[in-house]
Length: 154
Image (cartoon, rainbow, N blue to C red; front, side, top):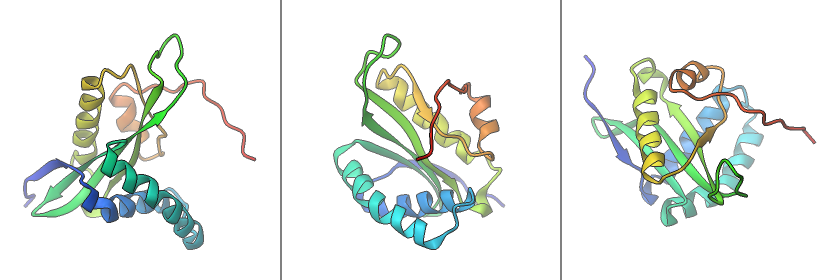
């Protein structure tokens, strides 16, 4: 029997959960090298800790019986404006993760709906994310479209 799952805002005290989601997300996508994950966590932890405290990172957590079972967040980054987006900041959805025992229950969709609603309330003209293979169908169904962004690995 599925228990009710509630969505709540992440607080600074939730930093360990946010980092667990971030690390697990990358491990699930094939970045399982422990040393690389440790380095990523060491350099990301201060950024997300500050963001949870000052609002530049907003997290949403799904809880069942007091246990966090999924989460995601938005990091607000300074960014150059353009004719399509006159605000000098960009909202990126990051750290989307659902515990394996709670997948395929609509939790990621509920989290995404909350984050998209928040971006609309903030009058953002767009929200961005990098899609994993597993998440792509969800993001497509929510109206996300590929962009012409390219990258060069150095």
